[in-house]
Length: 240
Image (cartoon, rainbow, N blue to C red):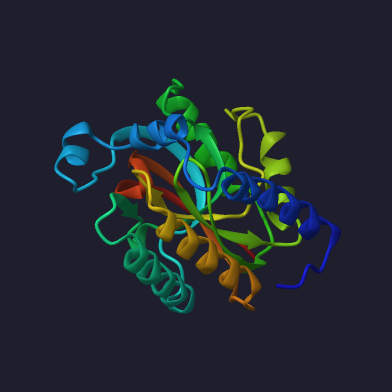
């Protein structure tokens, strides 16, 4: 994948630093793996059928769902991941729940009032943001088992986040600086052979041309279960 701008290069460096942690560790971290497992109910983990926990998050996201070409690309990758992991405990995000996080207005442990939610919705309805291209840049796995599709967008998303942070609305300090799409999580340790296959798969996807699409809308959502398993859409924001 070619790096076309300095902003792309900064994002590439940030992705690569996290990817290198996985390479240097030669696998998953036990302590960080526990952090991933906390996103799922204990009973579902015991039954080997991971089910995400309930939560309360308000966020602005793209996708949910994405256009068919990107979904087909992601499904093909998820299928390869399944073939590698086989019976190793893992969770892959359902296609219709895949999203690109613009920003989060409320994290699970935060408190927010309905007045604040309404204020955010009104403020968003008055925003005019440009559409932008999102280019995939391969997948990577982290030491906590998180699997993501790397995205690059020439700074448009950063500009939107910067604008939102200046509005008189609830806007937590903790925000993602990436343009990635979460694909799922590995939830238990993998074998050396699986590790090698995952590294090969990730490396190959990072070298391929990937896919490009236009992000022309976003949704203000109330997420009620991790990975959008349960959510409601409060407002659709068209990007011009």
